[in-house]
Amino acid sequence: MEQKKGQAAWQVNSLQETITFARRLAELAEPGVIIALDGDLGAGKTAFSQAFAGAIGVQGIVNSPTFTIIKEYEGANFPFYHMDVYRLSQDEADDLGLDDYFYGSGVTIVEWASLIEDLLPPQRLELFIENLGEEARRFRMIGIGEPYANWCEEWNRAEETE
Image (cartoon, rainbow, N blue to C red; front, side, top):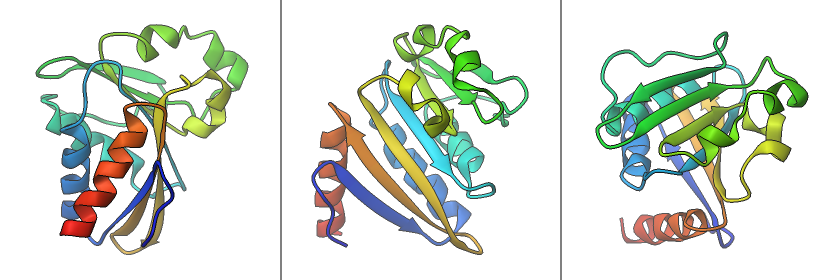
């Protein structure tokens, strides 16, 4: 599938392939990385987040922060911040002091990120999970700014050589 500059897509057919995809993305993670994660209910946002967290060295159970909004974990080299803003208005989200997470020393995944798009950092990886049935999913990535646009370009080059 041909992609526009700064965009990439990846299709998986099982939970194990979702885990592999999350691990590949996690290899690029460093403090300050923001992943704006969206997809329909049941698309696999939390499963992706759990796999990503495990890949950066978070120990123990990572579960959905639906009711707590933000959960903080220690990874091997930096903190992991997992957010679920589904139940928040943009004003409520603005009152949370998200900049401490977005511009801090950790990696942040925001589930339902499109609901607070105006509050997100201008540079981020937007990741949309499309449910294709059973365990099949399509991950569409849009890299906004650096290093995210480069990630998508590298992803496309790697896919061409596989």
